[in-house]
Length: 251
Image 1 (spheres, helix red, strand yellow):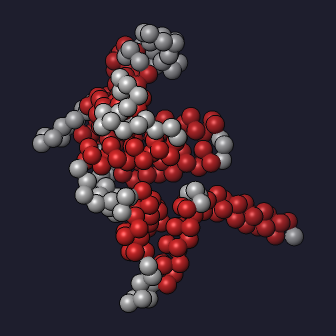
Image 2 (cartoon, one colour):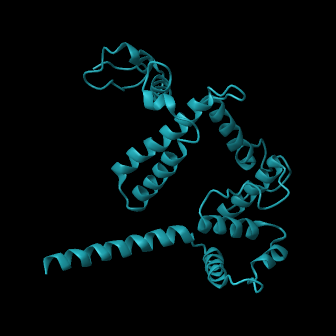
Image 3 (cartoon, one colour):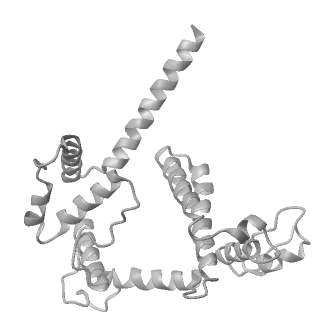
């Protein structure tokens, strides 16, 4: 097997002499290898399917791979976590590769990474500031809760948001969307006034929706992620159903 520079990666057996894989073999890091092989597959002379993909066509696999990784984590499947985390990385790199060909506003994964690094630094002034206070003169947070509140303040400052609703995707399901709205409202300095919006809608028949919202708010107050809790409960229900079905088949 051929060994790549700077680490112990080796090309799969039987592919050591493929000339198309030279950029992969010469890549200085694991992430650079991923970038190289995705670029080869997406560009002319690569894979016909990969070459036809768009940012829109890749949304479904992005969502599916994310849920598969969640399943692996919540079931404690470490081997599957390795695979599914790789698949979610592929989706990010693939999306950026497609973006690099946009004629109006191209960008690549390196720009994405640099923006991410900048964000992580500016959202953690308590870690990277030269003194005990952050850039705004606030006291450095002493707990995870205070740190999260600082993150939200820095985000709002950077994005110049005027509403707690800005940035909440309407493409996500109603349950996680409701949980996000409730979380944002709870963190707002004006949460007491904003929480009036959660009062039951007496003008329309939304009793089930209002009941669900009340449950999500109660879970949030008690530090419970409602979607995680529901997924875990459903997994238990599914296991029970499978057991019952197996018992019935044996009768």
